[in-house]
Length: 120
Image 1 (cartoon, rainbow, N blue to C red):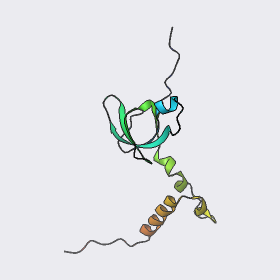
Image 2: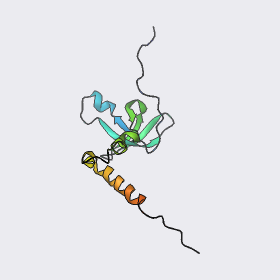
Image 3: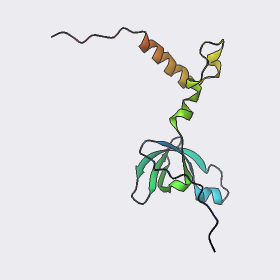
Image 4: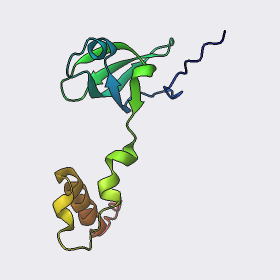
């Protein structure tokens, strides 16, 4: 008889520096709170496991399996900036402080005259 269970985890090879949502399986299956948190990939191992660093707490997670990780794409983190109606009244009210700071920096950089290299 065939096993009808499917692996629902996406076949993804994560890279150092990427952000992932990690679910600690032991904490999850024992009903503990705080089992799911954002991590940064620190290292990948040949067996397909990863070392992670929890972004908020600095907690180290050794040998995490990809089955319990989901990639957090940059496009999702930047969606509020990419889709912000900048010409609407009160548009900045719904944006995060980081988004406003980034846009302010981009505006300042765009309005500066480029510096010429020093002549020899």
